[in-house]
Length: 73
Image 1 (cartoon, one colour):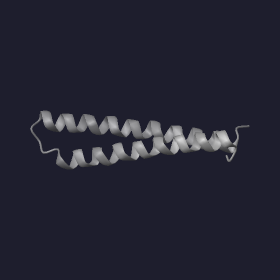
Image 2 (image 1 turned 30 degrees about the vertical axis):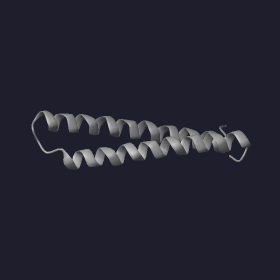
Image 3 (image 1 turned 60 degrees about the vertical axis):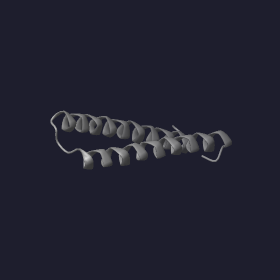
Image 4 (image 1 turned 90 degrees about the vertical axis):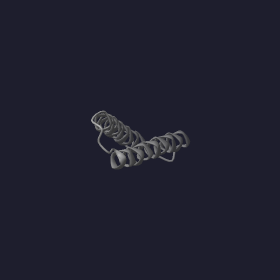
């Protein structure tokens, strides 16, 4: 049975994978809008938010690994 730390890490890894998929989809949308000559301002802003969320989730993963290493999780 996985430890609490392993479960937390697995959940964080799932969140990262989901965030990466959202960023990829949003980049495709921005590119499609740009290619069609459409205004992509809002889509670009959302992309920035999604990328920041991904970065924070990756940072959280590092913290989880540190907690596992010191035995706190």
